[in-house]
Amino acid sequence: MTDPKHWLVESSRYVYDRRPYMVMREDSVLLPNGARIPDYFIFEYPEWVSVLAVTKDGDFVLIRQYRHGIAQVHYELVAGVVDPQEPLLVAAQRELLEESGYGGGDWQPWLTVCANPGTHTNWCHIFLATGVERLEGQQLDHTEDIAVQVLPRDAVREMLDSGGVAQAIHTAALWRYFALFPA
Image 1 (cartoon, helix red, strand yellow):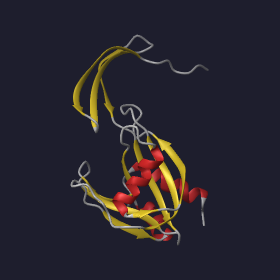
Image 2 (cartoon, rainbow, N blue to C red):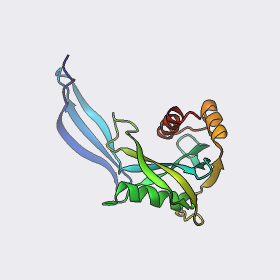
Image 3 (cartoon, rainbow, N blue to C red):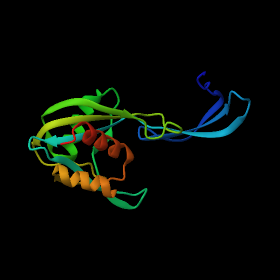
Image 4 (cartoon, rainbow, N blue to C red):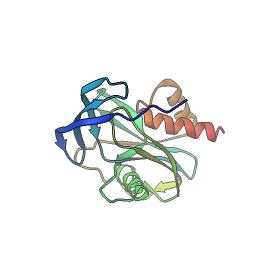
């Protein structure tokens, strides 16, 4: 069995550019079987980080915020955009402190996933931070309205079972945690 072959990009043009947050590119591509897709759209996003934060007491530091795409408020992990040239771990630690006021603890890479590899160019790098503690208040951007919620393990598991986390990447990170640390 052979792997599928790469597509050939015949032409490419930018149709939307709001760097650093989003760039949309339109490619005209030739598939290995000879078929053409004249208008295949790609979203160029910067790298993202998310943090699965667990306190010294074993509680989870989550946030709640409104997401306009689905017009709903859900639980999420702390997350954000990696600044240019910023190390991933530094970005994750910065985001946790800014959005929740929590920090410290032990950090490790947890999961790296792509939100939609068919149309997105970036990766989301999720870190597991254990033993975190409240260090200061939130330092939110003027566009952020985030409520910090510290929840016990059982409440987070129940929330996952009932669909209380809409962000698929965050759901994957939390389910992986419960699979690896069942009790």
